[in-house]
Image (cartoon, rainbow, N blue to C red; front, side):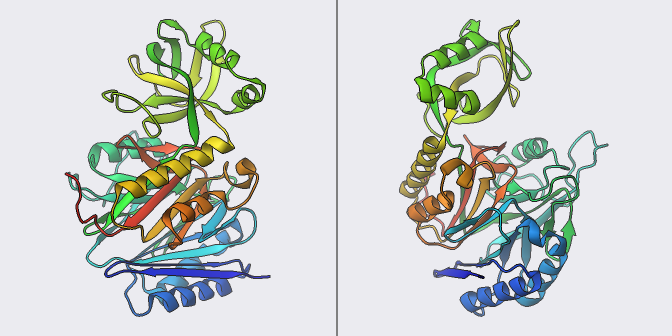
Amino acid sequence: MTTHSTSATTRTTLQFATALSRKTDTEAATRDLADAILMQIGRAPIDLAFVFFSAHHASKASMISAMLQKELRVKVCLGCSGEGVIANAQEIETAAALTVWAACLPDVKLTPLQLSVSQLQDQIRMPGWPDSGVEDSTFLLLADPFSTPMQEVLSVINDRYPQSKVGGGLAGGGQDAGENRLLLNDQGFDGGVVGVQLTGPITVRTVTSQGCRPIGERFVVTRAEQNLIYELGGVSALKRLQDVFESMEGVQRSDAHRALHLGIVIDEHGSHFERGDFLVRNLIGADQQAGAVAIGDVIQEGQTVQFHLRDAKSASDDLHFLLAADRLRHRSPPLGALLFSCCGRGEGLFGQPHHDIGVVQERLGPIPTAGFFAQGEIGSVGGRNFLHGYTASVVIFSEPDPCKEP
């Protein structure tokens, strides 16, 4: 049975809509979605659209982009294949699915972006990208994990556009290089990065839920090299890790063996540290002889760290907390959202379907929302943009706050 769901929100200037099709016939699904979007948007020109599709539709990605360009006449249309598709109140993890999310953004400047990275390049070059600037802007990026060193790309963006936020995710559905699909307007790619820069009269903010809770004490890294931590607070890092294990109860201890991570404080000038202040990275190994632990990032002496535990309850609580806090900070209500959720979340983590999208709709309201299950999620932590894992990255669109704090 094919299900089809739609929703739309309209305000004075900004307008958003989304539609979902579970048809397996790509042409029929795309046509249905174009009709549904036009029914919601009406005659308003569509400035930005995203299309996300399961691997079932990947071989016909060029057909999807051509049909959407013809039917919707979108100024900037982006898309990619994913491990699963998210739209409105549903997360479809294994079945065929295709969703379109559309936005009318009057007076907002949209700059389409594309980047291919050669393995022979010794540095990231961005031909055609905007000049460096201090203006507040947002980048929405979709990338292929097999061909793109996304951490390095984000590092360049952080340096080149220091006031900007980045949201997005790494495409999925393919098992090897060349099998994922990226779309930019009427062009299709099997690698690299596609994206858009937004500037102008709109508030776009990112909420990055890393799904962990801190455990044990905080420590200063007193000896480290590259991604190896030898000492925490003058004591062997491995001894500190063992102490954390021994402090746990039975069930928690079994969870920690497969879900223990390390949180790195982003802003060392803070007086206290809580959710959102840590960049969470995987623990990837240990050296018994050296007493060292290895993490999935470069660490420096003098940084403050704390072990973190990831489980279903922590992940759920974190997303609820961060979205609720975002609503309290902003007077303008959310009008539309994009959700990039890790393929390691979903029903496999929470034991039930539709968790992350359910929390988004509970906290933000039944606004047009779409996204996909990604192989890596892009979002900001502590004012800098990073590539994450096991994360839910939410991009929220609203009118500019009437009384924006300086």
